[in-house]
Image (cartoon, rainbow, N blue to C red; front, side, top):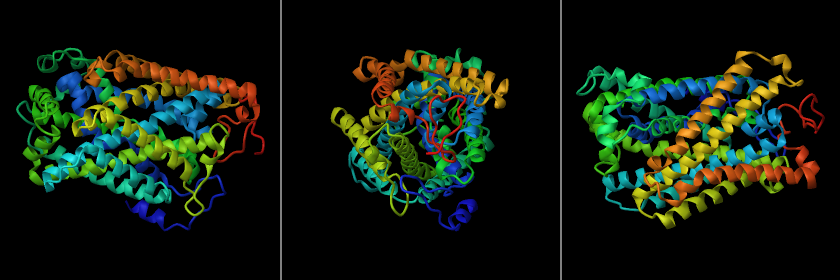
Length: 523
């Protein structure tokens, strides 16, 4: 935390109108923004039970596989970020590698996914805040009240300096990691639960042959297990989105991305092992079944109470509220920066590229995100108003759609990295492993995860016949194709706007057609 404090004492930086505050974030602060987007405590409390639902005691193996796939994906992604520094992230990378049509489609889709993630996690915030505050103080308010309250606070934060947000998220992150670590130490030093430390849960083979999942849930669904694991990392790729506000974007992207992917991976593997070891092979699956049946708010809470005591259970309950808020706010910020980036390049209305006169935050883009998130929460609330629905519908169904979209864009980005480094513009940076084999393997891995998610969406959503569950894969596909159609429209009718797709970089001027083989012309 000292790095954050030291950075805050640095002289204030300035930004031109329509630009964000340059040099505001150091590597530790960017890492905080990224890792809190993944929200370690919320990821473990919410996603480990989902992973256990599909794999029983083999949940750690699912996190191990996801760690490997995402680390391989990150190799090419980091090489791209070393060449291209842009707030647009995936959107800019895909444009530079595959062209403006798939680039714009990816930018619109990924921006939308981040925005609905903010809404979905706000649903989890509403559920945990409602149940815990009712238990503590006897104040029984529905979950959506807390979801909207959390959204209002996020909107207020969005108007201020990004450093303030980084400090808030960093504080929440340290508290989350500390509480999880304490529980891990308690469980492991006690030698685990009824079956000891379940090291067999680390074996990928156990994902496909798991008696505990079959006996409790009726089946062992690898797709459900991998969804729970991959969902835990959503947001790890945010480093390029803070390029314009970073002190050294090319170096920071590498440190922050690898740090978040590998660091979170090891932590998730360990904590999922702690969960299944604490409950035992059969007990872990049964605990999740009991949670879904409403026996307790989270299967982690009695585990924390048993191994750490009532104070640790209370810390988990409290930090689940702050963790959900921090996670939602991280997605809120990234969604706003996608809208800001697309607006500044003339793709969306120019009003969204306005920044705050003093703090240089993307205020109008943040306002747009606030409205979209509020409408999304409102639509789910009208259809499913109960507090439990805030968790099982809003906070579960929304990520299914969002993860599918992000996995798809990550796959496209993998192939864009290959195309970019085979082009005349960047062939001097070509590397057989970093820019060809690793991105290819990463892309194939993302496609495989997408298939498993779609094939198992009925079990993941707990309602195979629900209209949203049936339709969301088609909605994602239609949104991507619609983005491509919009890009084609711009090419035919607004060539100036089309020429600016994916053009802006934090440290370089605008580019002209064609993308490859042309250096940047002055903006």
